[in-house]
Length: 295
Image 1 (cartoon, helix red, strand yellow):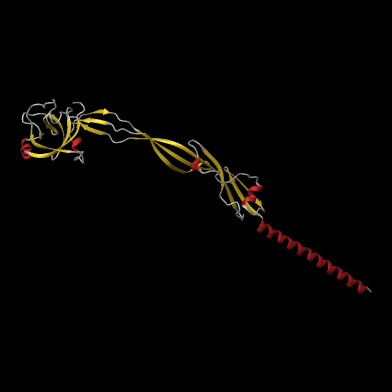
Image 2: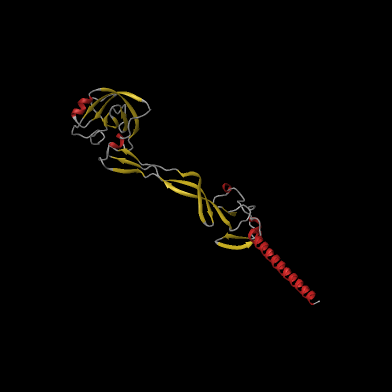
């Protein structure tokens, strides 16, 4: 009888031990399941907006659900084409660094970007090269302003893109000249001003007989000192003060006369007697350009 009771006690103890072991096993399995669930379902995400970062753990599967959890209700993307902006107008909107339907993974960072687009006009000044005209009454190396000219103004239309307050892109979409420039006109006493202009292209040429002369000790018929570029003409054919281009000689001004210079004959000035003799007498094309302004 005593042995029978002892057997029953041992059986009860074994049953209790098995029950406790089973309970611990179930608890361990449940813990593992929870750990597994947390590891693969709960993710740590960070959301950046306006210089602030919010980090937390979430079960949200996509970017859209994370934003919904944080009560972010912005409409993302540009509501209109920037080219439709009026001058001086700006456009503000938000964009995301991730797609709304992108799945969340551990450590995902979502950036909410504030975009600002401005359309404005900028003006810039520009100038054109000055022009020089030879003045036979001015000493070589001297010059004076005939016309001060005018600077031009260009209006550029600019579209500027800012992201989170920082300049991201700047595009010039059009340019328009709003003030047309005018070159400064200078009168110069140096013959090389016109000699650098080169030969005449186009225009009508007249045939003249040309001879050459050099220093005589006298001033010209117009009062200008003799120097290269002075041409003696018949004023009945070519008015004094007319700018000319002579084939083989270059630019000059009809600024002198001569007793033998009649009809279609001219006399070009050269700096030496030897040069004048070398020129001799020849038939040349003469181009009539314009009249000297102060004659």
